[in-house]
Length: 89
Image (cartoon, rainbow, N blue to C red):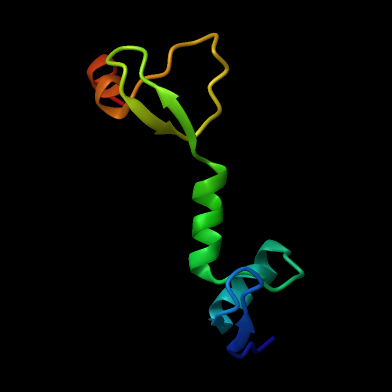
């Protein structure tokens, strides 16, 4: 099927954005049936918002953001302290 670029309106910010033919082909290959409803910037912001949780480093006490929700039963480390503890990571 030959796809053509489409101009869509973001439901989040209202901006127009182009859904390219190659993106449409990618969606079809993945079995997605709906066009994106948010522009790339709003999709990225939404992903970051979902995947960010505030935490306090168990080693240095600094405030940090982690991609998981701390449960409280295991220590959470900031990037610098994590790298010190796991140099191969």
